[in-house]
Image (cartoon, rainbow, N blue to C red):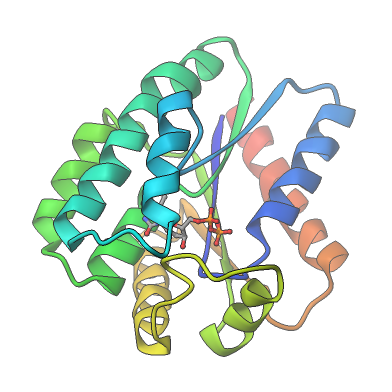
Length: 206
Ligand code: TYD
């Protein structure tokens, strides 16, 4: 079972994925929680380059780096964990590349989709939790802790395009991508909804 967490800046993915991990482990599941970019040793170095606000990267180089990070991550971490029967929770995956590099950066859709297909080796999540939040709320939350990274520094319009692309992806694939409004509700309330969706999916798979 492969579950991804997605959403714009400050949507609360990291908090929610950690809580879900604890919950699933308490129920006796073996769980791996991992992140993109930066889920492997080489990936951590790639992450530094991608997020460093002083990195000067053109948009094509950026998407190649995300693809390199993913290629390493899928073959060295995600696939082996799935083969061992673990539930894999991944904080950002292919939908981030589609939302940020097609939506945000406006790179050609076919190029980005092709890179995603190759780098993920065709591995598609069983379930994707999309935590939706408008940029005016999410960015404020994200910028509260520390210096802005290269993406957080982007203008609001960029983040609006990212959000719109996410919503379009969810609209195109409602079976896999579940939208959860994370703008006004409490952490526990959102977690409750996530658990219900995940439990439904686990029952379906058994
Ligand atoms: P991170 O600190 O993990 O962001 P967050 O806390 O919001 O999850 O930084 C990852 C950044 O990289 C985030 O701004 C989204 C961006 N990103 C892409 O643009 N494309 C991608 O394919 C991925 C995985 C992330």
